[in-house]
Image (cartoon, rainbow, N blue to C red):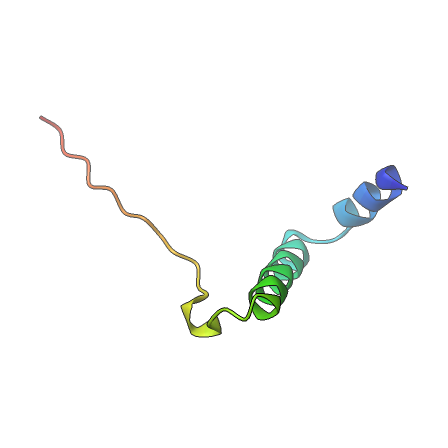
Amino acid sequence: MRVQSIRDWQRVSATARTNAAWEMVVDVWKMKRWNLNELRLQRTVTVLRKA
């Protein structure tokens, strides 16, 4: 059953997999009753300078 599930997900586009994962994240936030306004992707920026 696990192998079939993996094959099914491999047939789906990367965009569809990302959307499904995001929907699961939103569902967890709703179940925990956390503020959905705080739910967003965050990007950490690091500045590297050559010495």
